[in-house]
Length: 228
Image 1 (cartoon, one colour):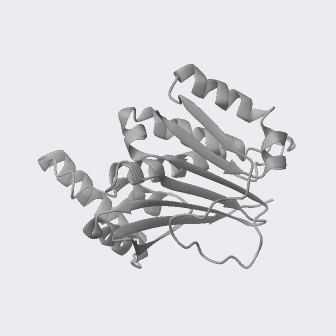
Image 2: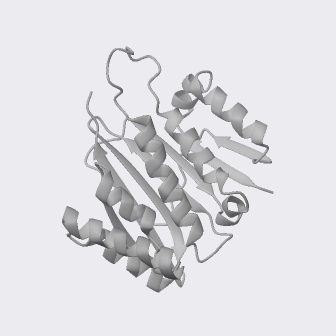
């Protein structure tokens, strides 16, 4: 049974479910990709790894859990989850003459890349990947955690935590594309989507690796500023 678990604040969710989320939920049901759609209006459960300690309390939070084996059956589920989460944070009451506080298209693109990458390279197909989004007054924080092979987790960590300029990122990106086009070296092209986010989008990425119960847990974090 395919299971998508969503954790949020009761007031926040039920205030929004009658608006843009109603369309998203209907879309999920239309695709019939979720045999069990569970929304828990309760205290957010402990994640698989330790999140950074924020100095400010988030204004809004959403947590989504899914299993890689369910997503990889139909890759459209990655974009469906991404669009659903992005729609949740859309401010439908804002004056349309004003620029949106959160770029929903940007958020959906970032989420889609994170979900695809985590699902594709999860070492345990049955262990849930955990996606968390925090909205602060002037910034947005996204993290996704998955069980990973040690070498893969270290590779992603090295890529995201290294200090590289725009030219170096572009060269890395082109080299990965060339490897994929000429040799079909999928393993060497791993992380292509994350690299695209690094070089083309106004976001900051980093990664952390933790070991719990003999498993390596990779957490990719993305932050960017939002303007009111």
